[in-house]
Amino acid sequence: MELLYANRDPLLEFSDTMAQWYGGLQIARKEQRKLVRRSRGKYPVDSSPYWMVYVMDCSIAEPLPAAAAGRIRRAGMHRSELRKYDGKSILLVMDSSGLPLGFDVLDKASSSCSFSTDLAEGDSVEDTRTFYNILTLLQRCMDAPMGGGLPRQPWRLKVNDKTLHRLLRNQMLKKGNNMLDEEMCPRAVRLCESPDQKGLSAFSLRWPPIYYCHNCKTRSFPSRLKECSWCKAVFYCGGCFLADNKHWCAKLFHYMKHGAKLEELPFSYTAEVTSEDFSLEDFLFTNKLVTSYWLHWSQLVHSVTADSYCDWLEGHSHAYEPLKQEAEILMCGPDPKHPPSLSEPLVSWRQYYGWRGLSLSSVVAPLLSSTLSIYYIITSLLPKHLPEMHILKKQSLRIHIIESYRESQTLVTFWELSVLLPHVTFDLVFIRERLPCWCDKVQLVIQKVNGRVVLTDCSLMPPEGAARRSVRVRLHRSSYSTLQEPQPDLVIGFKPAFPQNDSWFSTLPKLQSLRVPAFFCEMSELRCERSQQVMREATGGAVSKPTINPFHCPLRKNGGDNRLPRYSNGFIFHLLYKPSANKPQPVMQTLSDLRSASLSPQRTFRERKAEQHWGKNGKKEKTNQK
Image (cartoon, one colour):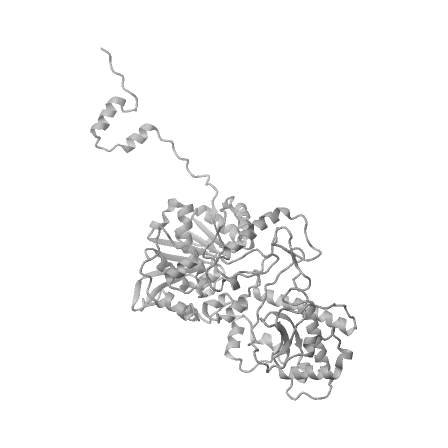
């Protein structure tokens, strides 16, 4: 079974969904012009206290506000792309929580005529056209809400524009109930409230998870999706249910059982971030996590770039912004008096937060998940699965981290490894083909300088006041199969996505030849199983049974054609290499070999007596009978 996750380019996902919904609105508008009326029945009232109509002006201001210019740059857009929207307005309908229900675009003529401050009292053609456009938009939002769910109608309607409110009020008074019945114009429109009502919150978009039919990939807003009645994991639309899916249903049903275990987190915000309608963008916006390392989590930022290597390096000095208390503890504060015991290492977020003195309301966990996953692999999984490595006795560790972009851009978080394991010197080597050009063969060091953790270039003079303890970092912009580096002690990958990247068919054979321990963190058990197929095909080997990572990221990933529990770093598996054909077979030793190996050069009295009794060849000496 090929399940579809919402893991493609989030901006592409976002725009594609809005484009499909807008196409449905255009069809509905054509039907209205042809006087095609569909019987809707009476929709239930939405649980949201009100729906809000936002009027957003798309005119390009000169110069752009600093916040808008920065957001456009981080999204990878050029200002010339915005020119075609200059002068237009967007009508966006959302519920009280910020969930988008639909939108429409008004051209420059309608926008300038209907939303000007000197709106004419007369019944202009543009006023009437705009009024009916708004009605069609609201009807489409009721029939097929863009956020998904059943058809519904608002209890109240609010607008954020006084001119728009006056337009709706005037048109309602002139048209009356003869032209606008309950079906064409719901009660909420006739009783819409002006924007000066108290209690209106600032604009905040809560983008919902995008779900699909597993078979035809139809989104949830054109038709209602239903979950499979057997496994409760896969979504289908009404005409696409598959009855021959029992084999996979048994596995998916088993995977769904682990959802409760993954939700066992101690944080005060656990209920929000583990829910099936969790909105990542709303979470980031509410907690003001819109700068520094948090940009690598936002779906609305296409790529994080810097103008130069120096700017990129400087950006790491604000790693935990805007979390000032956490930055003070993790970057500036003294280390805890006692590191965690190697015999009883930390195995939960609660233990780590308590040891580090962090509040359980702190949202810093997503930034630390990958670092603590490495710590968990070193202290818990390697001693269990590969005890012959004696990993806990090593004084230095060279770790290769492959194809992990977010980790290579959040380097300062790995300082925590030296705090958790202060007796180990870490050498972290990041290898990925798609890294910024200035990252190739760069050598860096993470260390404390004058009591604050900083990231510096090794080619520069050591800064004054630098502590001796450090974490060495190297970046390579290349494929792992062509890397020329000393053999590592350990290889780790985050979100490797074996089936989606052909480079693994050359990387896995190299790992097989090195036979180095390799652990990978994936977001779901199903992905781990698909990794098994790639490993078998590439090397003839296998992967271990995945284990739940206690330090997985608490932010749930929703969307796609299923509701399987998915979290970054949620599960960990390691490679099981195929036995080498050239590996020498162990030689059976004889009893005499074992005995002679155990004898010291200066034989003792007991050893000489044993030799006299048994002989040098281990056979009992015959005595001559007289």
